[in-house]
Length: 340
Image (cartoon, rainbow, N blue to C red; front, top):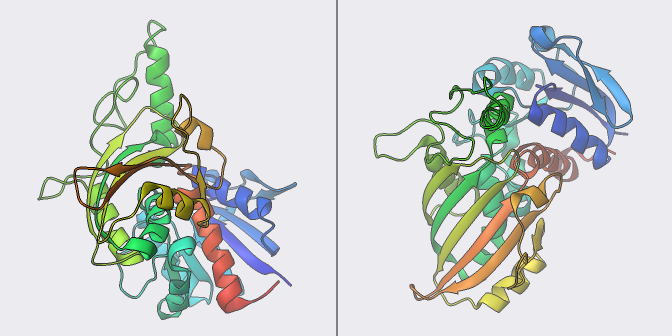
């Protein structure tokens, strides 16, 4: 016996990935419903070897459905998630709307799987920000060993994190560099993204940080440990898919780089590729389509007493969004619902 599963936002980048990953991981699905807005109504989406036709999100009745994976943005989620939850369907939401709600668990299964048990307060579980998800997967096993005091992270985030229009803008601007008459001015981004980097993701806050940077701080504390100090600089780079992060970690006690490497090698969800030679590390191009969070460039930081540096790369449409949502559904099934 399996589950009746809803994917809301099935025609978007993340929604399509959710359908793909549900099929790839052979999640026990008895029935699937792909929902979209009316402008995308009737669009066909792939689900394994099957094709499903989208239904209208606005009129859909969630009664009798087990789990709904939401990839529709905060505004639409505010309207439809309570409706689904009230109907008895557990919502796993990819937007930022519920992440900081104390009554809604924020979950990365490799880090805090037990948190799903708190879903019943609102019948909603939140998926973290893409840049946070891969970082806490890397931090968790190290924190268990040596207790992290402080994290300094710089991100190199692909344009797919800003949606299809952002990917189109990078593509069009790149073409415009070589084809006369094809030039395209910035629209999705504040400055040219082709052959450039932009140290600005989401809106600016009063203290000079951006909302994306604030998210990494707040979410790391909620998921991993509220005592960890985090400071972030988030940068958009001209990469289509795959987020990268340079992470500096200060621990309460000394952790040797060789021990850290072995800890990470056996940690769930992580693949270590760390050879001190040309090409002995992973770049975003190589992580696309993979489930893993890749760790490279593990080394001591001699500028602090107990410091390490590492390089972290992951497919943001997968671990940063769709895969993590499906893993939450799997965890929910194993811990709570226990079907299939």
